[in-house]
Image 1 (tube, rainbow, N blue to C red):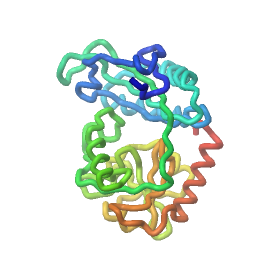
Image 2: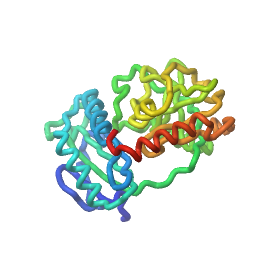
Image 3: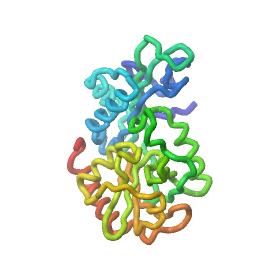
Length: 278
């Protein structure tokens, strides 16, 4: 069996990736009771680690999960990155409710912690997106938390890929532009960049937050139809950075990248190059 990851750390120790296992009764597996973060390793260094650990703590608080001490998580990340020896990689840090009885209630064994690193596959220079017929619930009990309950995203992304797109875009229950399955979205219209506010139900993306600091992007409520009518648009995420959107539901936008997108791409690239933990 080929290893999915290059290096792995499970509950306190490095393990061979093919031997990285958790209990069949882990609450993260049986009911999706867990949180996670995906980091980009750039130049052999995890990028924006502090921000990702801050968001992991926020997500865990929403679920009522107790995390290990931050020093433990930082140490696990460092061990896995060193063991992998990759200059460019994807790192995933997952914390679940741990082994538990069958059902929604947690057990008493404590959390399961997994850190894994894999090679980062290159992405195309631009993306096609498809608006899916399902809505993000901005009033969900776990709204704003990055949880392991990703089945909704799996279904949406598969729907988008069947139409030839690389990312699915959700509206929220109010018909407002919200987010992608693993990305935030910014549109250019009338010479300005606009992104949905967190009140839309979108995740507080780390790359989104950094783009807001280095590019002139306003937060504003947008209709889902605004995307297809945009002059330009782009996705932001840990593994995409700033990725221009070329098509929406198969129809091309006027430019990919447009001038505002190109400026945001340059500004974000400079930020990454200048500070590994902004």
